[in-house]
Amino acid sequence: MLNLAALLPDIGSGDEVIPPSQTFVSTPNPRRHLWIVDDATRKIMMGCKGRGKAIDDLSRFSSREKKDVVLFKGGAVLANDPKLVLHARSTYYLHDAGLTEENRTERENMLRSLTPLLLCPTCRRPDGKMRLEEFRAGEDGHVSDGVLICSNCRTWYPIERDVLEFVPPTLFDDTDLSAFCNRYAERLDGLNLKKPAASSSELYVDQIKQREHFDLYAEGAPGFSDYTTIPFIQATSTRYVRLAGTRLTDPGAWLLDIGCGTGALSSPLMKKCTVIAFDVSRKAVRRANEDARARGLLGTGTFFVGDGSYLPFVSSSFDHVNTLGALHHLPNPKEVIADIQRILKPGGVHFAIENNKSAFRKIFDLLMMIRPLWIEEAGTHPLISRQMVLDWTKGLPVRVDSETSVFLPPQLLNPLGKFAIPAVELSDRLFSLIPIWNRHGGQLIFSITKAEK
Image 1 (cartoon, helix red, strand yellow):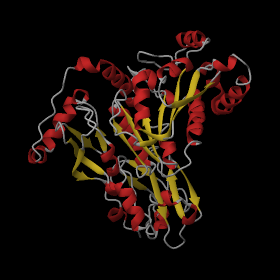
Image 2: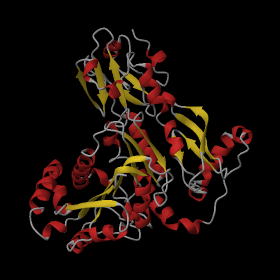
Image 3: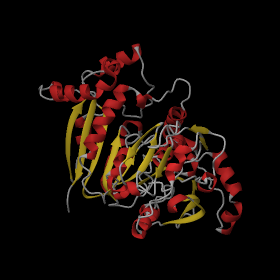
Image 4: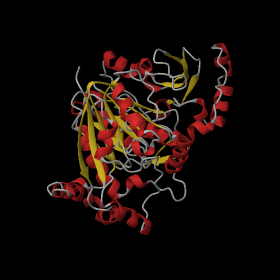
């Protein structure tokens, strides 16, 4: 009999796992995965989101996916146990024994390789360097707890439970920061680091408002249910991820996702390239990070807390930058668009989705007053038009391409359920053929391509 206690030390009270057959083991917790390989047959048993299926053999997995295969000798023995109990807060991963040392190093160093690309969001010195200090190691070479220290102003930024909080100290949560300082007082004293001093909160009124708003959504507060699960958002997100994914042909490329929220539009792209994603909402970032961990994606991307109004990266850092519904939440979209061009490599592309300033917007607003589907907290520019983008990029060495999308209101698409996805695709193709009308979809899709040197 397999010694589960030795392999899974966190077995205890929590979710029940009932193996329904010898082909797979599944877990009812939708945020957890359990992978098992029978070492004798090389069959992979995969449990995911309360369902499972048998995978014929290890060769059907890509090299990236193999990094997250759990390998248990005699794993099929689990199917003979009538009931297993796993700790609900834990994700259980072991690596495929065939993973090469070279691939292990690549995975372990991925997050650390981001540090040389970062600039201090407090002093904003373009020649400043950030230094990483690890306090507690995480899984797969990740830094679970630690700090990033600016060599210029000595401001430091906490890393806790794999999440970096890379914002000016005014945007730190003071309770959490104090707890972090108490927990690592000796380590911080050894580095001669004091608790960062906050400046006036009046400088960050817009950021604080956006953080509070999206924290409510991330924690599922009353009246703030997860609108990303409704058919309309699912349909439009499917289209946007497909459009963004078609541009990602180089698996070695780096993509920055600004305003990533809970990672719904970031995680699917991690299978195509390295994705660096951030959001001002701490609770949204934690959800994104937990979901990516459960799906085995933290080897190809990372999430951190950041302020989209300032991009803390050295110039020419990224091949792609996405702002999928983020610009209209920022206080300075014109400046951010210009700064995105700074951090893009020559030939890089900024891909964006925004609320279109269309002739039919008042109809949408009326329907949302009659039957609201979500609560909006926009910034200074809630609607963005193609002409606004052209004005904002005037004088920059770029090419702007655009189209509009979504010609049917969400109140009409939601009753269609899963058929909302083909309905959006079909209606977009149809209305795009009608002159004038094709400029007035509810969403503006545009790309800004940086000129080659």
